Image 1 (cartoon, rainbow over the protein chains, first blue to last red):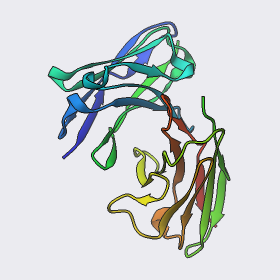
Image 2: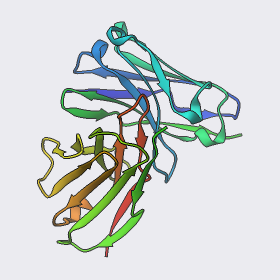
Image 3: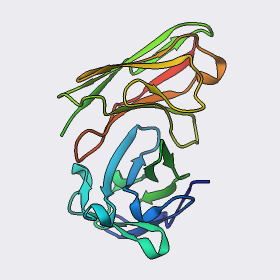
Length: 118
Length: 107
């Protein structure tokens, strides 16, 4: 069974940093392209970015709102995806999901809540 | 970046109604589009992939059509469990874009 479990969310002051993790199981993580998607309270879905598998170059792409502030990385030895978030703004308050296309489906974690407030 | 314009933003419908939701892409994306259903407090669930292919386990009352820039999700006969918010997602380019969402409410 495919599982994606996010952690690391919490309350942070504006300008602060936070690192989210996503532990994957049930599929070959090292071959998967992994993405982060967020959803602000009561709002729609927003793509944050993606990291390709190392065999496909391991490169990253980011959405415009987070470019230069957020960094996605992966540790295939731990089946873990990371999202390093710096220079956090109140607009970054959201539920953050880890996602991946695996075989013929699109899997999502349950999300981890990040709140940016002074 | 590709923009996705989804309409309507909300609709009211009755059980048994036929419902249609549309997404328009700002440039051609082939058939690299999926449709998702999200219920409160839950992660999105994919219903349709490659614009018109039904995800395994999804009821056949859901269907998708279109290619290039115009896409449609149709629910042929709305059921009580279908009241939710629906999103399109394009993944044609190096970046993804979601539509703004359509909230389907009970009339």
